[in-house]
Image (spheres, rainbow, N blue to C red):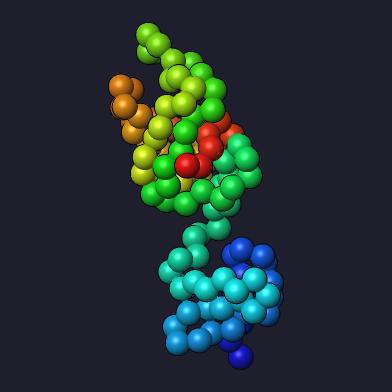
Length: 109
């Protein structure tokens, strides 16, 4: 017997499969198996889950080693990529180039 994954939204164990989609009867969430990430649970400063490709805003000024200035509060960062580690967001910040950010210093747009 095949074991089905828990719902990624509410963690319900009562999921079922319907025409290639997994469905949660408790919260109504539908997803494909490819939508489930590799176990990375990255959340922003407000507790919202982040996914690859999201856009975020920096919530406080961040000093950057080796740079003359800081990343200012309110800076928008598009198309983030989630990675494992202490700095769990890879992105490109306008005016600074490729960066790694901590998720507790950003909020989802």
